[in-house]
Structure formats: structure tokens, C-alpha cells
Image 1: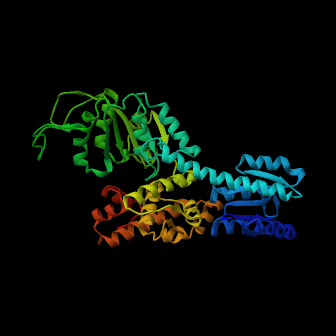
Image 2: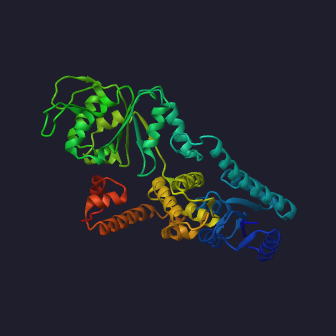
Length: 452
């Protein structure tokens, strides 16, 4: 069978006996005599099921279970336990173990238990494909909500959809903040009215005010006609203000006034217009830290942050990776006229272990690249970018809890920026295009990391 089982047992005779039995059943078997060896095997190879003793020297069964789930939550863990520790084994099931079996091991029951897990995994995969063929399984424009974290995000978005309260969406770059903003809009009573987006980081300060509020003819040099701003365009609907942390202080005052008084004026006009758009703002920056630094107004923060939604990074919701991968494969295979039937276990294992500094946007880019480069109907591990095929360092940091993850992400960002600047001949506009960010965002990163 095309499944790998890792047997973790510190008793040599029992380890060899179990490994031999499972090998005869047709499974690929990997052996580990202590927890650290087991974790190393999981980091270095694709494992589907772990059969682990509950009590071993060096690490408890619970700690091993938590470490396994941190590396790859799709791995199914069966706990082996003595009669006296059954209660502890049931506690482990609450933490993610799929089942437990008591010692001495009933080999027939073990065989049935593993077969049920394999059949369940196959059924889940088949049902997922069937649902995607027959129904629109995505809530809005491709949002995946199989993880509890994203289910909670969509739950909040649905509950506030019919309110007029301002919403502040926070999350790292690439997590899908605009998709959640669209969910709030299209799930509520304003769904027949406009959804208008403005990216504050993509516009220079001199144009941002005009984009938001509009201007009269002759209001400034180049204003050869009257122009409506985004507030007017979004009348009765939703105005999505992306990268709200990039708004300069001078313009923050005007935005605060609009939120307070529900009126605004075009540049060059003294006629007040009604602001009847629901405000949804988003940022990947720490606004509270900016308040302490004096670069963001506290009163504006409170006006925007009536309802707060935090979108978790992809590394915190790895259950969503397989369905995202399947969706991206179908999309890019269709766009590139390629016959791609799926992805190999080893390739999926690498994707499950990766940390995704660029979140869903990075995963999308990885799958697009892999589909284009694939020479067969299945995406293989060597079709993935090189950085994904050596995930041991990242996995070590995640499971050790040494606090080095932020430094790892920052180092990765710096290397990407340096590469883009090198390719673009140090032209920041071109480098920003290569990175998929605005020039202003690139300048912010250069300043943040002290890069000249």
C-alpha cells in the first residue's frame, strides 16, 4: 500500500515485531527507537501514520504528539499504552491522536485500526474532489475554511455582515484580507451595492486624498475635470481601505472626521456630501505600536477598530493547505492547458512542512510555478521550489520554541528583497513589481531593515 507508517518504540523486540507485521501487510515502515529519532524521520520523509508508545524516556507521549502535529497536522497518530495509562491515552486523543491501542498489542485490531484510517483518508480526499466538482465549496472567491481558525474568521464575518459598524482586518501580507472584506460585504444587506477598494500603499500621498474624496475641476494642477472619489463611488456599499497604516497623519485627520460626522468635501469644494459607505479597513502593520510611535492617531484607530478580525497566517492553519493546493492545481492546469491529475505524497508532505512567510499568496505562486514546470500528470517533489525541499531547519525552530521564527521570516524577506533589487538593477519600482508589492511598501521594508 502507498502509505508509510512510523513505528516509535523503545523496546527493540516489540519494535521489530510491529515493523515486521506491518511490512507484511504491504505498508512502508520506518522505525524509531526514541522520540527525537521519530521527529527527525518525520522532518526528512513523508509519513502518513505514526504508531507510538505512550511512555518513553526523554519525551512524553503528549509532547511527541504535539511536536508531530506542529510539523504536519495531517499525520495520524495512534497511541500504544499499557492498561494503567489508558486515561492518559484518552487525554492524548483530545490533543489530536486518532486512537489508542493497549498492550499487549492485538495485531488483528491494529490491522483493522490502520485500515480504517487509510480508508478514511482516501474517502476524505475523494469527497473533497467530489464536492469541488458538484458545488461551490469556497465561501467567497476561493476562501478555504476547513481549519477551525478560518471557520471562526468566517463566522465573525457572517455575523457582522448586516451591521454598519466599521471593521479592522489585520493579518500578515498574503493572508487574504481583501477576500474577508468581500465576504463581509457580499454576505450582508449591502451586497447589491458597490464594493470599492483603495490600496493606500499603492498611491503617493498627493493622490491619495483625491482618490478618497474626489476633486473639483481646477482644484490643483492637472485637475482638468471634476472627479468623484472612492467614498462617493461606494455610496450605499462598502469602502475597503487596504494598508490603512500607510495613510499619512495629515490625511488621518480628514478620515477621522468622515467617520465621526459621516460627511466630506471634494478637494476644492465647500459643499458637504454624505458618506454612506460602510468602512472596512485592513493592515499588516501593528497600529498600536504606530500609535506609541506617534505615526497613527489613537482616535482613528478606535473608530476603525469597532469590530476586529485577525486572519491567521497559513502556518497556523495547515489543515487548509491540501484543499488550497487542489484548487490551485485545477485552476493553473486549466489556464496553462496542462493535464495535471494531482500531487505526489512527497510533494504534499513538503508543502505541509513549509512555513509560508508569504502565506496563501506564496502557496499560490508555488503551485503556479510547479504546474508550469511539471513534466508529468502529477506534481512531484522536484517540481517544487528548492527552498521547500529542505524544511528541517524551519521545522526545528517551530518545534523547539526558541523564538527564532520572526528572525527567520525577516531574513527570508531580506534575501527576497536583495534578489529583486539585483535582478532589477537596483530600480525600486521594478523590484517592487517582481516582489508583488507596492513601491511604498518596498521603501518601508528597506527602512525597517536598514537596507540602502
